[in-house]
Image (cartoon, rainbow, N blue to C red):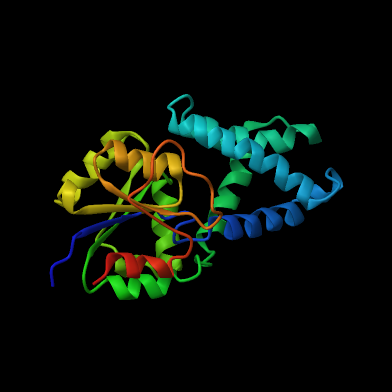
Amino acid sequence: MNLRYKSLFFDLDDTLWDTVCNNRECLEEIYVDYRFDRHYDSFEAFYDRYMLCNLSLWQRYRNHEIDRHTLIVERLLHVLRPMGIDDVEAALHINRDYLRRTTEKNRLVPGAVELLDALKPYYRMFILSNGFREIQSLKLQHAGLTTYFEKLILSEDACIQKPNRAIFDYALINTNSRRNESLMIGDSWEADIEGARHAGIDQLWFNPGRLPVKGFLPTYEVRFLSEVRTILQY
């Protein structure tokens, strides 16, 4: 069988692991268990405040404007300060609890297991993620995904985050993969698709929300994971 690609690099969060649903469940548990309802009118108000800050901090983290500690502390302090709490240790405690809970969630993006089952006999597959080392490996384990992937490539190990070309070069070197035989599959336009393109790697954009492209057409685009198998045509 003559396959165009030999190595498939998957993003994890919101490409395979349902980050939005899993994290929302964890935040609602935190909201209830820590009695944040005494300070917020609703969980939605709490969630919206947290997420707006969290997304902004992750963008700054990818741009090397802040470090991991700042990201972790500030996203929690942002929701604690309106309660009169400005305590770094309290933020770190809640964050540890929150991250522990996330690793125990196993909701996957629809079609993820079916796709990986179909691809595994034909491709070398890897995770390429900006997520934190101790969290991503546990997510894979608890979601039953570990056996599908030869290696977990993380920004913490490469000391650089997607979309920087260097992490894609690092991934190719550390998996003994050829650039022209590799495909990056991910949901983030900036981190996965722009990053892979700048690294000279073909891209498959998982775009369930039908977001507009920005400046160029990716190699492939799908709305559902079930479409990936058809594109790879094995």
